[in-house]
Image (cartoon, rainbow, N blue to C red; front, side, top):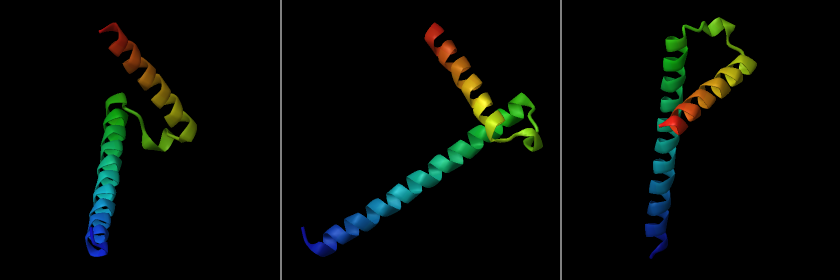
Length: 69
């Protein structure tokens, strides 16, 4: 392969990686918003510790549910 071809492939790879990161961020935000809405939480009451506690409880609940199926 030529350097130009490799450079183009590298550029495409960087672009794809950026798109993947952007989509991941969108999913994370949508999931967080959906969970906050479903639980009836208020954004003002959420701090880093409470978010981590909710995340732990939710993941434990989901894992338990998945193991039962």
